[in-house]
Image 1 (cartoon, rainbow, N blue to C red):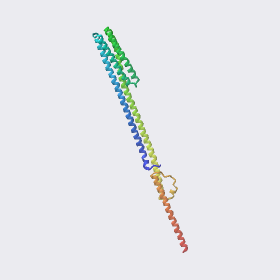
Image 2: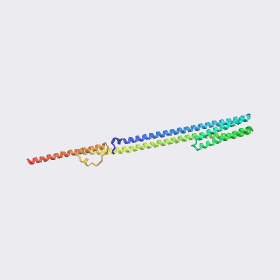
Image 3: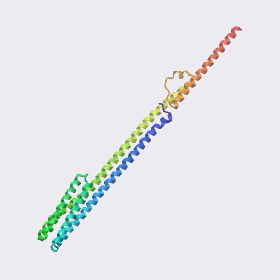
Image 4: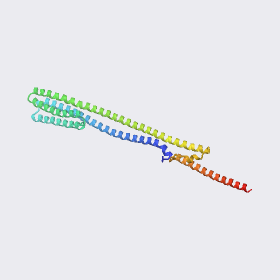
Length: 286
């Protein structure tokens, strides 16, 4: 009630504007955070896929090197065979190091972490069986072939595990995108509800202000009509407290005007009474 009329009329649009700006700011901040989160997820996915591809390539090279050594073991001296077996062991360790990067990139997922652990174990077993096949081939090629078959079983499982890691990475990416879409939808719905609520509150405030303004104007119009009809007692009998705005100022001005008119009429009445008294005295003297 102590606000001027111009400020009262600005309450509703200012409320809607404040809520709209706040919603836009919140949406921008959350969208920026979601973008950074998505970028980190994409980087992790790229790291996983890159590590998986490198592991598959290194495993294929290890397999080819093992077969080459088996094919040449009968024509090589012991020192050369020993050197080639050491190279196979080194390649196996390199693959395990690469697989450990998969564990670092996928430690948030239990299924992926388990598969990575299986891959690391099977790489060590594959290298061990290849080394055994080479050792047996130097004694009996037939025994070496049997050992290679056992190594091939491990290789098949390794290739399957690496494919599962790629599939799991793609599945995790799809889940992350779906979760981000759900969060975006929830945020949009929440901000929409906030805007709708702000609109309803602004509408209620506007209705309350309009109602008070109309009532005050009707009161001022009623006072003006009464004065025009000659009823000056309305100002004296008015008990409604005027509002602290321009309409309240108008009501007070009308009250002061009526009080001024009452004073003027009282002065005229006193002057008239004095003239009447003097007239009677003159008439009596005559």
